[in-house]
Image (cartoon, rainbow, N blue to C red; front, side, top):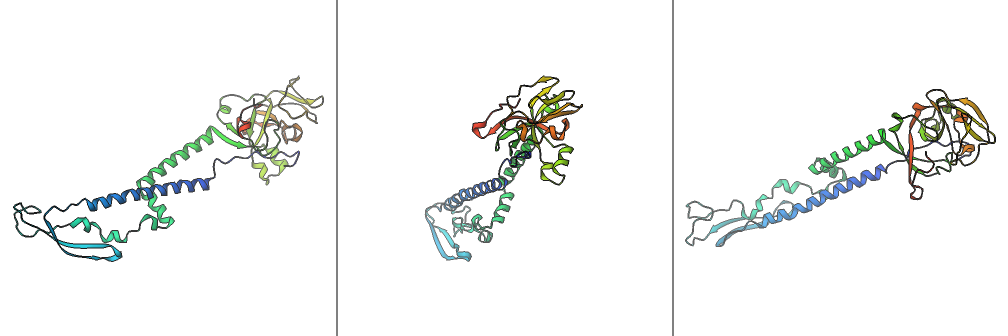
Amino acid sequence: HSVGVDQPYITFPLANSRSYTHSIMMASVMRVLCLAAALLPSSVLAFNSRVVPRHTQFRGSSSFGRGGKFSTRHDVTKRRTGGGPLFGGNNDGDNIDPNPGGLNQWSDDDDNKKSFKDMSFFEQIQEWFASDEGKEDVKTYTVSLSVALLLRLLIIEPRYIPSLSMYPTFEVGDQLAVEKVTKRIRPFNRNEVVVFNPPERFRELVGESSRKSKEALIKRIVAVEGDTVEVKMGGQLFVNGVQQDEPFTAEDAEYEFGPVIVPPGDVLVLGDNRNHSLDGHIWGFLPAENVIGRAVFVYWPPWRVGNTGMF
């Protein structure tokens, strides 16, 4: 990053959507495969559960049918041993089992139906969406995504620091949470760190067509509406004639500024790295309505977790 030019503040993505969607889909596919595997033993058990009674005699033939499926046709006759007929009634003749061994449950439709593992990827996806489990998963994912988007839009969102304009409070690579609720219910105070959309004057300086003109920035509020601000005496900040104690700055400013009075509805923001920040001493006041939210804490990397210097 070039020294003296403030780098825009960019949004840190929540997750790799592509790999995340792939992981969800593969998990669902595996669940369908497990379901198919679980159904196979039950079919086999259904085949073996039809027990032919004692004293039953088989006559018939067997063959391999279409698709290599083994099929059989039998005549079943019960030997009379003083008991009743095999399938009820008073007929003393032969009784034909209408479903010998359950074999005729295998229909032509079963022969033509693809197994899940033989389907193409898109057919598997269609099968998953058509299943009750797939519909339930889609409902769960939709609700979860909607809640996450609402939280990000209205309550809190993650941000990523790409430059040293706020050093030493933030370093390049820091990821922090920005809350968006309190800006609606209480006024801004001095020394608060805020994320905001750049004002018109900033866009004019960097160029309307520049990507930087559309990216959010992060700075510290040093004065609010009605305050008289001045930078003098070797780079010291004075607000309403009182020199400010600023332990969070990298160094004293090498410029003079003011005195100016902050107009109603505006704030004045400066970077903690005073000599390497494109901030309010160059482009002027920030409309409070441009503020996205207050920075509340750093959550990454682990050794930087906390809110030191943010209030």
